[in-house]
Length: 231
Image (cartoon, rainbow, N blue to C red; front, side, top):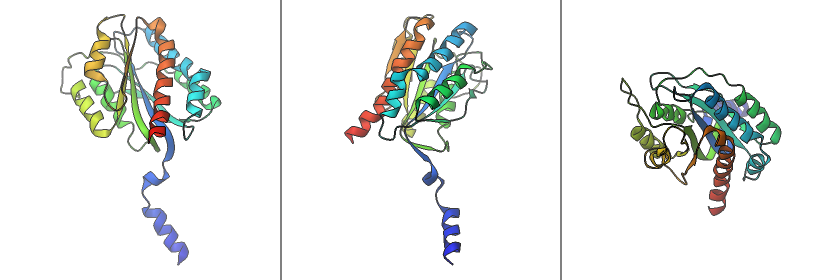
């Protein structure tokens, strides 16, 4: 009878009870639209990989209340083209962070076209659903070099994506690359970034991306620890 009761309990226990607890669930949403040439794309991907190899980023992960974060990456481009994505990775050590860096550094490019940021961010936010993790904060870290371009069909646009983030309690932070548009950071601040503790950083060109991403990751990871200490 006890065995039967245990089996019934396990059958009906909420799946969220089995989710792995982390300090932060983070989706890196990377611009792969046509305005980003292949060398610029590799600088973005290489910069993210380099950031996860950085000792300061690894130390920020380890310093959290749980000492573990969950990370996934998506590549977005034309709103009519499905975004590409990695799986989710649990990171709690320098070795795991370096392994993730190697995976990210080797990602192929299969997405291009228009700058469908709203659709890309909507896709990124849906990646949190049933991902197997439970974090204090959910953050989408979006980078790109242009404003959203008008789509030819009805898709999720930036105002809808921001509303979706607000409804789900998700923070969107931005890294604006100013080589194509010197006013892009202001657009990111007014039209993209939202949620608790949101912020926007800017770089002049792709050559500055790696260092900016390193600092951005530290700020995002440490933000989860600061909020935890205040509660």
